[in-house]
Length: 92
Image 1 (cartoon, helix red, strand yellow):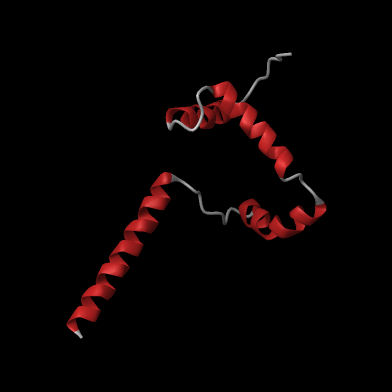
Image 2: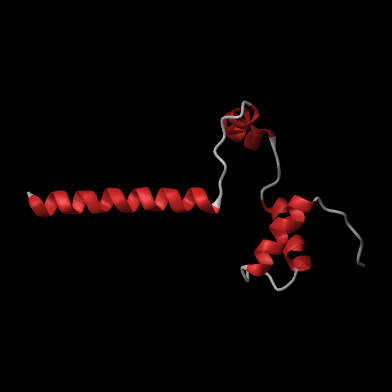
């Protein structure tokens, strides 16, 4: 039995991006996967306790946005550090 659901534009964009990356054949498959994943790790008091510090940081505006740009920057910094250390070792 199929049902109609309404999602925010942000949620739709995330699902569409997953389809564009080839992770799912359709937006329906991506949405179904997202819903079913929720059942894999049910929300519990124990989970809440484990992630509470991170949630509190986000509430205070201290979170770091996990974006493709941030990942590129992190890898670029790591590559630069690796290359510097390799040069230092070869010069020693």
